[in-house]
Image 1 (cartoon, rainbow, N blue to C red):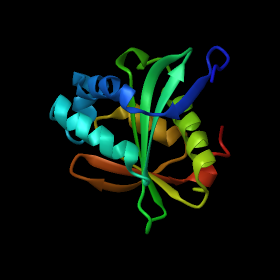
Image 2 (image 1 turned 45 degrees about the horizontal axis):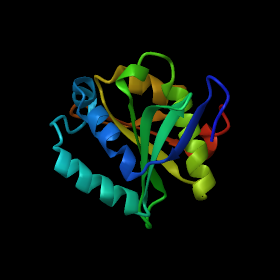
Image 3 (image 1 turned 135 degrees about the vertical axis):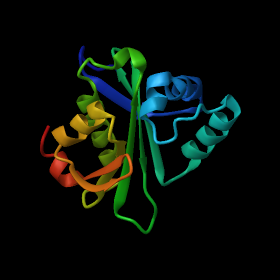
Image 4 (image 1 turned 120 degrees about the vertical axis):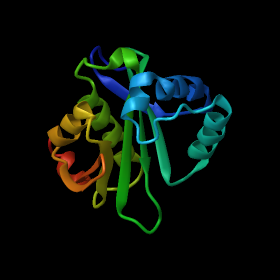
Length: 165
């Protein structure tokens, strides 16, 4: 789908996105901000990507602007939970451009169109040193709910976020 200039679109990730997602994940700044900061091997990533794409409890989206891949957003849940865990990572060339809020909002709209998650709680675990991510989630109304050894958890209801864009 082509979108007007400056707008962000999202699409479901495919195996063709694997190398891009892997390279973003192994980039040094991403690793510094990730809970698991170790490099991921290509083979391990390929296996992970195959599982993620098939898993009905996980939605992996690629965000695009002007047909350029600018980020990846992953949503995870399980059948017994009303919690949807959010993970976001930007293409290194898309950082510090004010895109993350619109990437996340576009991704939330996409997810809402796939399944009825209105009553779910969104949750993000963020390293305390990751100030850009903390600002992102706070800008959407997420509140800190947990604080433990270098990590903070931020949560919000999906229904309250979708009313703020």
